Length: 386
Ligand code: FAD
Image (tube, rainbow, N blue to C red; front, side, top):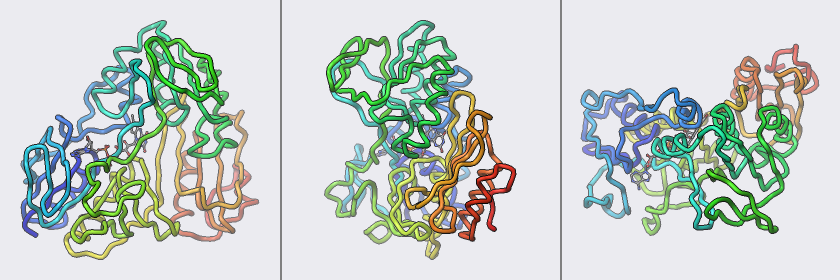
């Protein structure tokens, strides 16, 4: 293959370049990166960067040794016969789309922060002054992590959530409500069941009437896959770039990886789009292999972690296909877990300060073996195949 272009300079883009070289691609290799920085890690942006422990999360990479042309600050604008970019067209034989996702903003003319890029993190960090009133819209993963860092910085933090519990969209209100006490313990005011209509200078307006005053507003209500530039390209787009289990899009020679890819999961029998680090890290190996003529399926068990209010929360699997839920351990004890079962198979697990459960559960999900739901309710019993 003479020339491969990767679009998107995040973790998935970098990993694709590395995987292509590791798997024997000797032709041209170009990475088109919209941001002015080489690929960096995003998980620390809501953790160590906001705590002021680091300002640089660049992922170590030897671009010269990789033989990869790095076009920073250049964006793809369309896909026809060639890749259209802000600096003109680029021809290719193979293309990997790794354009990630962009945060959703709310209406209104008031200043609102989002947290996706290193620049976002630096700007937000500068606003986290002692005594500042920070209002975070959205009690999701990012909202909780920022609330953690902001309280440590001495801010007065309010989190406004439209659903009845934190994390309701991600893991359901029943499980999410178990995390509500964490906010109160940390001195964070959690106001759920409130929909924000708009952000105005000095605060925000609520949909049902009323307002909340704020010095700093962070909108953390989720992301959209970054695919607008592909409209009209002929590629199938449906909540991301549609790809099959080999990460092939609907156009031959074009692949999709990371947060922007909605790929077919043979394991779960549905299309998944996973906005987490582990997928951006590992899916590129499969896309690269297939672009170079292989026939590998990406059939991973999705995994992620989140650090909230001094707790390590980890998740593996895909619980929406479950028909039963098993609690494991007492939330008061500081460490607990939830196991989701479909019939007699484990399909999802969420753990709080129980990393061993997570490891065992992830293995049990991957193996697809029979699990005894009654037994794994006992936190003293290993979460593994029966
Ligand atoms: P991205 O990292 O979004 O990279 C895509 C890149 O493509 C961007 O640089 C973008 O500017 C560029 N781009 C977009 N459009 C174009 C275009 N048209 N032309 C050229 N370039 C373009 N995951 C976890 O599992 N655990 C965590 O604790 C965790 N914490 C997180 C904290 C924060 C603050 C954020 C934002 C994410 C976190 N994640 C976490 C998620 C994880 O970081 C993402 O899943 C991962 O970054 C996705 O990588 P990606 O390469 O697919 O996309």
